[in-house]
Amino acid sequence: MAPISIQTVLISESVDPRCKAILEENGIRVTEKQNMKKDELMAEIKNYDGLVVRSATKVTADIINAADNLKIIGRAGTGVDNVDVDAATKKGIIVMNTPSGNTISAAELTCALLMSLSRNVPQAAMSMKQGNWDRKKFMGAELYGKVLGIVGLGRIGKEVASRMQSFGMKTIGYDPITPPEVTASWGVEQMSLEQLWPQCDYITVHTPLMPSTVGLLSDETFARCKKGVKVVNCARGGIIDEEALLRALESGQCGGAGLDVFVEEPPKNRALVDHPNVISCPHLGASTKEAQARCGEDIALQIVDMVQGKKLVGAVNAQVLASTFSQESHQLIKLGEAVGAVLQSCSASNKPCSQVEITTQGDCMKSSTGYMTSSVLVGLLNHGSGCCPNLVNVLSLSLRNLESR
Figure (cartoon, rainbow, N blue to C red):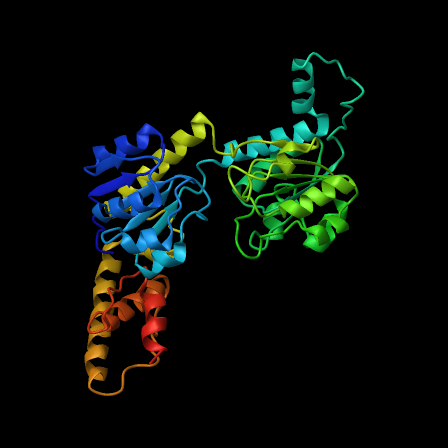
């Protein structure tokens, strides 16, 4: 892959100082401007090759389309739901996160909320501060022997499982990607959601926020659960339907909730926060000194590695680029673009291409098929298409430019 030139980076939130230091040590100019409104960010972003955010900056399509020079959006954290990834992809901008930076911190907070729910620790502490001594009011239950359902068995789900197993909890779970034999090696029995809901004494969610996970815990789901089930969400607001949760708390179907995240942050509707059986935090999952240092350092090092042509880590919309960091790949990409350009010139005078089939042969080409396909399309679309194709955006551009003809 041709080196991506990143000369200027804007950091729009409070990111660990190591992020700026690492970027500057590697010749990248860094500007830090926090708390910008959307219009201010749209005006400012025109001057930068890179943008580094945490979770507060909403990188919308409007901001992305105003970013004439932007080549990378780096998220110092795990989820990228505050970035319009589709808009970035269409513009050929790499979106990168730090997949493992806040894993331990998020897992530890999840465990803290599970323990707090079982023993009413925050409520008891507050009662003591008010001068009370209510031993009977805060009767709890042991975690030992209880069933914990973990929905989402990625890095954080795995760490939660190992910690709660040490309390003697039985861990079961669901994940559409991680194979059951892998999670079995961590002591987590996988099953369908239909099988999982009725068995759980506690449920914790660790999935991304996407259409398939919005309202994963709903009125219908709660109805399938044990009466008094306790739930924790340290992932993203909206995975648990907030109105359904409130109804389940009021009816007693849900015995308590530990919430670190909300659909609206900070939440204007305080019904859940104020409920006596809810323990809530202001989105503290990644708020440890260690996680912030790790995420800030990781995103800077990942950007530097990419710029220096060493490797690509954490790209959520440009996986095809991961195998383009070798001299052989550079030559093959040039070849692919040349083939595409020849194809374009051959078809220009006749009917434009409506379909392109790209075939590679030989074992040595197996790992090259993805970027070879994209590079041929770059060459094909590079002339007269009115767009600026690259390996990130060319598949989406080709669908619009070829199939629409």
